[in-house]
Image (cartoon, rainbow, N blue to C red):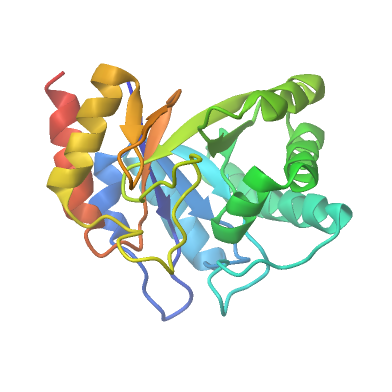
Length: 245
């Protein structure tokens, strides 16, 4: 069964982001911000408690150190810097989880760090090394594509597992990458459109790019962005659909 995941805990102080309290009961996996692109210790603690209350799996959601840009700006960092700030963020969330009697199960990089990881093998290695050094039981979530072989080999060599993710609410380019947010219709807002994608993925093992090219994808989970203003409607529709199959 495909699991639903959503980026959560992305508020910061008095600044509110997302509808965590309403979305958390509808998802299986929560990607919880760790303080670099969004969140703060109080928000992290509140979000972990919410995940525990709803029996939702917890993933660390580390990003570039970019609160102002919400982690969506590419920042040039050395491999050592990336490895260490990913370790730092996993450790911070782990401390919050431990204080609440729970744990982290996976790591999903956020925003620009996620996108860079998928096109720059050295960034991927740095993130994977951080995870392997911290806890080899943690899985790394990556963008599912037909070109994951190299990443799988690196993960295997480091002794960590991967989770393959498809985005429910983002348009895809013909090469299997996500359409840049600067392009029209990069973010899907129609639950009907998302359900068509989900149905096609389950029945055909593929989705269609923005030009209708068929992309065959492995899938463990599907993501809806918590900052999508239509997130709650989309997640409700997806949960209802999955509950009927």
